[in-house]
Image 1 (cartoon, rainbow, N blue to C red):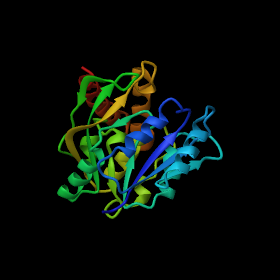
Image 2 (cartoon, rainbow, N blue to C red; image 1 turned 120 degrees about the vertical axis):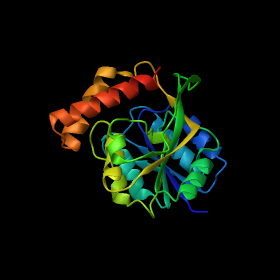
Image 3 (cartoon, helix red, strand yellow; image 1 turned 180 degrees about the vertical axis):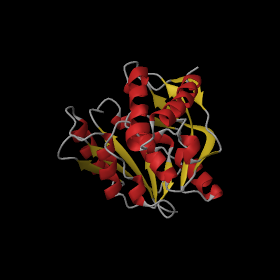
Image 4 (cartoon, rainbow, N blue to C red; image 1 turned 60 degrees about the horizontal axis):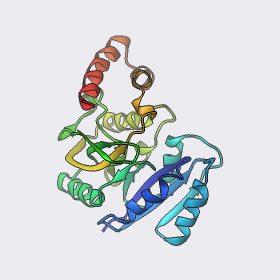
Length: 249
């Protein structure tokens, strides 16, 4: 089976990182490498990932020389990755045990380079809340502009179909959404597997829970990254706001 490279940016994640690694090791698909990229954590994360790497040859600990954020950490992981397939996982999120197996099956079934799945919101302890984000069968660039339904922790990319350069994330806020749009803008489509395979841990004070900040970030993407005029940006923003609201009800 082709190797899957799993990339995890790590920053002050001592509370979660051992559970995250255990979560990966519990996967029903086992042909993977796990790349943990410490972004100059101020807690004991760096020490923990070194110990985890020493204990399992499939785990690779990488250390950034300066704190540059999640996008740069993922890009560093991408440069170290040896697998045909790339999967992203954030240090505080949770995968179901069959996450890799199911998305790989789905990718081959659809002959797709870019797939993602449904997910469920969790609380501070990653306990499911019952709020599930369902996903469409397929997303084009035009459709993706008005919905941020692709959750980083659910994505899988086949680098025989998607150029690795397209996976490199820009150093902006909401870098993941900017990356999906870049890939789709370059003629690819994303295929959605409407099956819950991950839990999105959302502490009350998380960045994603700050609605005003989310609006600023998405507006910046429209205007500065996608180079849209004010009217086009506003039109897409309305669609995004409606869908984002419904997703949380």
